[in-house]
Length: 388
Image (cartoon, rainbow, N blue to C red; front, side, top):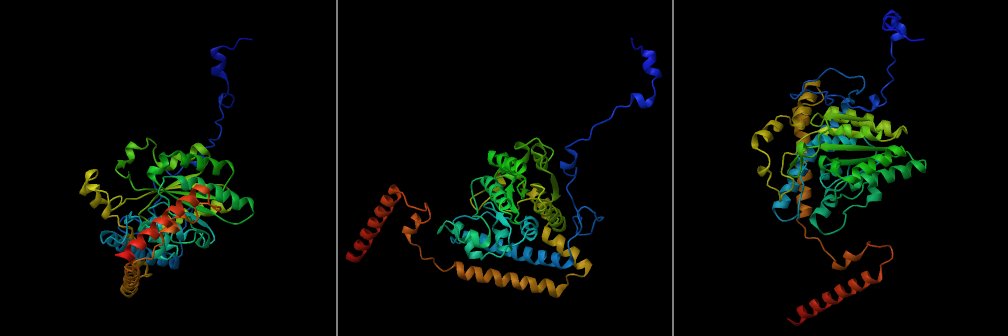
């Protein structure tokens, strides 16, 4: 029988209705706008049931560690100018991301930092001198990664994404309640290791939180030349990873979003990707001239979004902070910087032969040969000094 157009028109609305299948990507998509719980001036925005505000005492500790972190960052920058550090990548302006992230995980969780996470590491409780040892150039890593459950800071972009996925999978396989937090810069999302790590974690449901600090520049390359995606948070969708974007200069929102992301991973639901929109106030490192690729007006605009001032204003209004508390924390920060300065001014005793330690569990013949060559050169140099 042939169906006429008239018959189609006479069909009931129920018969003509098409059923739209559910969109599987819907639960993976981030909010269209970055999650924000505090306005730029520090006044509270409407509460969100999906991202409950952390307790007042937690926010007080967040503020304290952010102030100490900023003072540490300023002191480390000064040490670089004095020749005590070979290089230092400042994270000034990113205090909410640096400190909020480590407060969202447990001491038993693992952290995988980039070269810019020095502030995050001291906020995690690692000795600041040990944190700066790598940047000082006198050892491979100043702290024991297994003791503090923090991987060495890495300069190669995105390699930590793969390491975090592997460790998290291994921990889960052995039945351990461990989450891995991997810090990433926006530039690292253009690297293959980022995509391989996220994909592996998604397939094997590894408990990893990938935390992208989008500070708008990969050294001098602006974000617009790195991706055409609506935001970097959308990069998780293609791998089946739920994602979120957050105002990275809103400390309350950063901690709330990351707390939920960590809980998601710890519950066995697999990885979670968070993108924080923030800004690097200082040059890429002390060797960079940021004025060549960004103007002062842009920096000034972000200066008005200072995360430390934003949180202080909010906590004062809530009665969590007052002048005495702010002054006390400032004094703690100055004492922290003074101690760091004193200890960094002591010249480290460096053994050149230690360069060959921990390269292989069993040294190769070539490594042994190279070590003996250096040993002979050192002995000859000492002999010459004795004859002089």
